[in-house]
Image 1: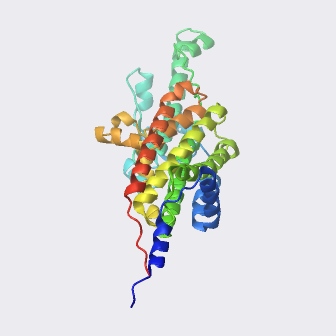
Image 2: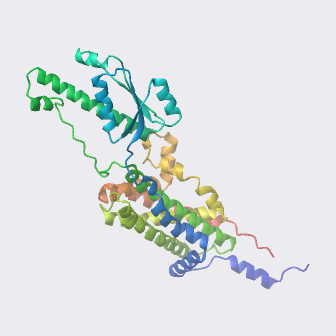
Image 3: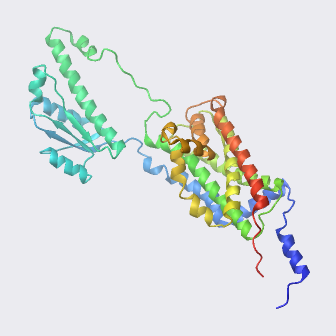
Length: 396
């Protein structure tokens, strides 16, 4: 076999030489490549839109009600029957009677109930004689949402009955009914939940996870596209060219972000729009930061499929490292440092504070500074990698 001619060699060399693309030519070419690549288009635009419709759907009921629970009544008195009646009337509980505690435990083990209340024998006699009396409530601590409702439903029922007993005792001592009712609680407690009026789980978790969705879909789509360009020997470009690519990918993600903040949250009736201008400024910084990280990962992976294989499995750890579902100061010291290398660490809390809580930009300035610092770090890494990533081999 004869050696390839100099003309062929020079043509292959010119194919992989970095092009001096302008910002706008790279911007437009990236748009064309995104809409010409079904996988990238699916990941960057279609997937987050589908998530916006269907991810909040399991949380549509927002508040957990009618949790199945058991009641064991060893007293069988008027007082115990009153307790059972009040517990059965609670919207949090669906009650079922059990003969003994062992049967109730077996029902918990088989997931038939989430907890139970034990009314001890002699409860009414203890109350009437002024002795210390109590009932026991046991819940499945392995499922904290159901366990919370079990405790809340039973405590409200027991508290209501206890207040009624105190009122009757005060009236028996000669107090007026209105005065006796007021004295059951010397300092009335009034609880007003802010920023999540329904106290629903969906309104808590979906706005935060939406930021994860925007990040991961943009990361995977960008890394896939860069990997494709690398395999086609089209990844090299100028600094302006890289900025054009980042700008195009960020613009598409920004539009998807506006879909979330402007329509998806409205559709599912989540708290929203408290500082819309601040939210738009946040997206304008968050999207380029993530797109730049995607370019870095794409050059690092250098394979189209590698981004899906790796990035799809780190979404949950990233969420827990963000400090939103778990207090960040309770994490190991190493993770408290590492978590600031990921955009969602400042982004989730900044987004929630702007969109749901109505914070001003100055109040969340640390989040903006952190994102700007991350963008600068990622861009420096991108410039470093583009000089040191070896060119793909040319097969003849």
